[in-house]
Structures are given as structure tokens and as C-alpha cells.
Length: 144
Image (tube, rainbow, N blue to C red; front, side, top):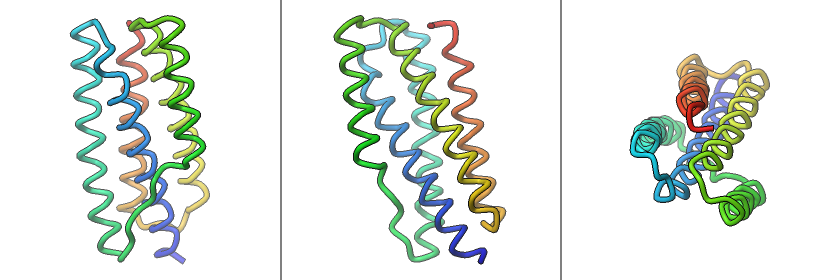
């Protein structure tokens, strides 16, 4: 069943992009290092572009997409704010973002396996998102 798997995979990508974009927006103003801020801004912009592409595809399938899990989103917000309250630094932000990237890559890889009948276009988008997360994690290592 290619179409249901395609829609499910695209929904998970949509939720992932939204969660990642929101997390980046949440910490962007707290970053002190201009290079780090620029790196994160560029990544956020790429996430937003990919999100538009995902939502356009979902619209072609007559689907509205998916918001991130409310509990996961709340826990992410709580962890971010507690960690920054304890130690507000670029290192803390890089650490939080690296953890988020790892969780995103893990989840998306699982969904790629789970929805194996998804159309190649959806699989390619999931791959782009995985690579984007992996690149961000690598790019921010100097700030850990």
C-alpha cells in the first residue's frame, strides 16, 4: 500500500520539521557566538523550506499534515528551559540541539523502515531531513 505509507511518512517528516524548527527558534536568540547563530539560522531556514515541500506534497494527497506530539513538544520545551536556567551558554544550547538531532535521525530512520512502501519522493524527503539533522549535529560540535 504505497499511498498510505507515503502519507504516513510525510506526516512524520512534517511533525519532525515543525518540532526542529520550533526548537531552533526557541534558542536562537540565546546564542552568543555569531557563527553559531548564523549556522542555526541557515539550518532553520532549510528546515522551513523542506517543510513547505512536505506540506505541498501532503496537500496533493489531500492531507493536512501532522503536528508534533504534544507531550514530546512539552518535554522538549521544559528540558530546554530548565537546562538554560541552570547554565545559559552556547555549550548548553549545542548540547540540547545535538540531542534533538540524534532523536530526529533515530525517529526518521525508524519511520523509513516502518513505511517501506512509501513513494520514492517521500523517502527522498525523509533522507534529506535526516541528512539535514546529521549535518547540523556535525556543524555545531565546535560549540559543545
